[in-house]
Length: 423
Image (cartoon, rainbow, N blue to C red; front, side, top):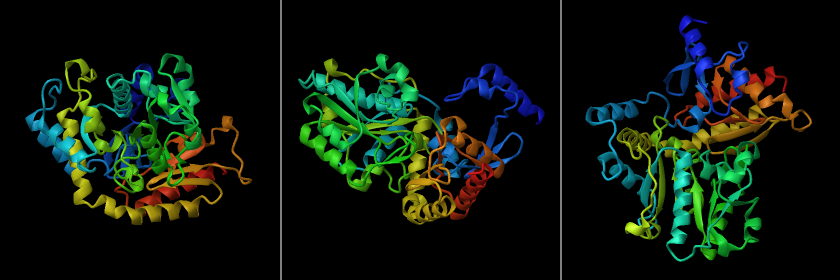
């Protein structure tokens, strides 16, 4: 270990607190955390000079790879003008351009208004608060019920956490948040009293934190129809699924569904800077006009010019490099590679999103205390792959710019790690 690595880890262990991390285990001298210092394309390097494939797109954010010249140039150009200005009472060019670009993905009479915030949690917070305030301002004060799906994940701020169905993350805070009804499927939803429901929220096509759980084909379309028939707003959380992950720019487009609120973050800036957006319809926006109806919500860095410049460059790359058009071949190759490598294990694949649920030779789940998912991901480092598990499901979500050869490298590295662990 070189002296810089040793210094950084010493400072980290004394002062830092990492998310979703057992700090006792992290600070154990026997454990060597990686200090990531550089990225190019799909590759990351640590402070010891070791190279790794970025197998979870830097926690599901990176789209076009690290240090992309178009993104880098956009940020440098924006820095020459100004890094940050307030969006409270002022406009800025990049935010105006970005809002128009995002709305341009949908018919002009649908999602036509954009509210900017900082991350996926706050994008969801905005949608929920808008949905509830809308009912208060349209003569439906008792229609304040919220419905989410079992094992859903919508963020960690208190409102978004209320919508989370993962008990490990959210049960201890349940009594402090908003009341939410959880359902397993559309049939359970239909049994509820719709007259008391303001909105339903779902991750379209695939639940990320629920071990890459796939929804049945057509389920999203049926949910939209039910919401339309009962006057319920539909919130789509595309924080993870947006920007090409499922094979289309947005997952909802695969079933021709337009929500009442669309929540975006993560890939919005290509994995460069925090930025989020909540899109909604003009009919909803109009209810918030007038001093007595103002939506009192906002952040200091809302619509920051640097983040918006990165997001515009991200969308430019989609067009110039024909990213969506190039995906079908990559998705097919990715799926084939995974199926050949992991026949014994359970695969769940949606576009460029894959969950490999580790199972023993009899197809049984491993005891939870064996932490097989974590063991495999840790072993994968020596084969040049970084990713994280959700319980015993290893998630592989590569940047969309990955070549077929690079995807093969990632799958082979994971296969070597699985074999090393005797699975």
